Amino acid sequence: MRAMSDADLIWRSALEIRDLVRKKDVSPVEVTEAALARLETVDPVLNAFCLVAADAARAAAREAEIAVVKGEPLGALHGVPVSIKDVLATRGLTTTGGSRLFAAHVPEQDAIPVARLRAAGAVILGKTNTSEFGHKAVTENPLFGVTRNPWNPALTPGGSSGGAAAAVATGVGPLALGSDGGGSVRIPASFCGLYGFKPSWGRVPHAGGFPGWAHVSHVGPLARTVRDAALALDVLAGGDDRDRRSLPREPGAYLEACDADVRGLHAAWTPDLGYAALDPRVRALCEDAAAEFEALGCHVEVVSPGWENPEDCFGTLIAAQFHAAWSERLPEAEPLLDPTLVKLIRRGAAITAPEYIRAVERIDAYWSEVRAFLERFDLLLMPTVAVLPFAAGAPPPREVAGARVSVLGWMPFTYPFNLTGQPAASVPAGATDEGLPVGLQIVGRRHADGTVLAASAAFEAAHPWSDRRPTL
Image (cartoon, rainbow, N blue to C red):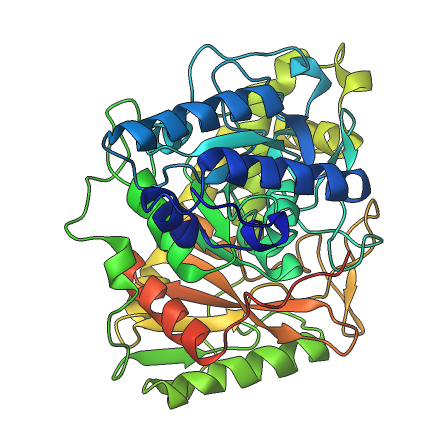
């Protein structure tokens, strides 16, 4: 095996690393050491990791190298360094959910997606930071503090998979596993200049996390390229009886779906879903990106879907579920918890059973409207986030483009598609004059994960972004 420089290895894609390892052009040990060295350099600034599993990663890399030398069958991610968001259980590694209540919690079993990554030969570098139990879309908690944006450490990377995004954006592994209950993969992908993919609900089994996100949480990858995310999905997807809502494995490979022809697809572009306030700098970049789909051979139509804002339904659902999950810990645990989490739990106490059921019924009605609308379109394009990255450790903005907005008014484009369960991705649409990334969201029809990946890959081929890296 020939040596490569760390500077070369850390920016290689997962596909490249996998192929280099198989050809014995690079050792899994070299790759892992390069990733750990990069982690040691950038994490004091970013605070992306809440646990660095250096010894376990080195041991796994040595085992991966032995398998290569012996000519044993190799998995799809053999020797590829990955990180795991700290809301997903990892066997033998502390899993806290960003909470002081679980500071010493070491699971005996992996979450299903984590087990699948290990079985595919991935090397787990450690656990990435999150908000407490992922309850808000920025990355900070009382146990591990604030995570920062690689493009400007004074700003937030978004969340709650912000540690995962910060890691991948700075070359600490080409892949990270996140979770998305209201935008928690797509928001940090937008803020950090990455590709983030939220698969169809149930596409990736979800057993092995913390409660509070039933019916809306998706596990998905963050990556620097679309095909790396597709490769990860090929490993992660498929039913498991431990999650009875999980979907059976689809025929074909998601990696192959990236090569599908998108000419002739019908795409709808909406700058605001008919109700959202939007930073004009975000709108300009996303409008230009959406228009590029015409050059890819798609028919793009400007639309205003006419749906009502489902924020109240979403808020009712999540507050009730968090109250059911965590209220028994109050008031004793209140001094240990993030005050915003306590507020969410207490809000849930005021929600009655009829109110909860009515919210669920309104969500069903909302889906009927979305489904009917998408009978005309293969894709729905819009900004991923309504604002640019804001100050790390600060509350999200309550004013957008001069308009007063609701609590979730800065992220109005993501949570609706957790309620419907559709596949959705954030692709880098460009950057502002200040160098801050902006994401375009691509939403597909129900279960049309392959179409979203194909559209994402076609856009990436026309406007590649992986060579744009933060100078940290």
